[in-house]
Amino acid sequence: AAADAAAELAIRMARAAFNRALAEGDLAAIQPLLGPDVMLVTGTDSAAITGKKAQMLAWKREFAAPAAQRTTYTRTPDTITISAAEPIAMELGHWQGADAQGRVLASGSYAAKWRNRQPQAAQGEWVLEAEIFVTLG
Image (cartoon, rainbow, N blue to C red; front, side, top):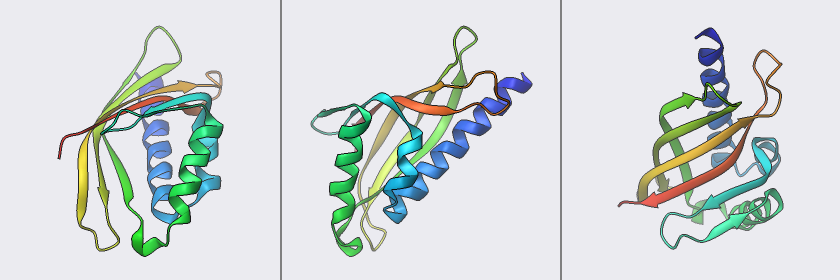
């Protein structure tokens, strides 16, 4: 139970770091949070972005827009379930995209799969393997 609590905290901290990186347009801070074969399925058109390199390029394009014209995405975990069988976890939550004035342009639900690449370490090294977003509003 203590190990699960530590794992959940590590994932919540990683998610907070990702949110901060998205808010600040900090590409370098995103890189260590992504697994090599990470997959992202977008919320509206279900476009699949496969692999760390492709996702980094997508964020680079997103951050190229002036901050005043950029949509900032925030993901908020509702539950994180740590697997008893493998060094993986499932995060379920809700997301929103807001403009520079804080107006919400889109929102919905998401699921994310995390993998601990260093299960022997106390905190481990949790990276995203997959995220699927659904636009609900």
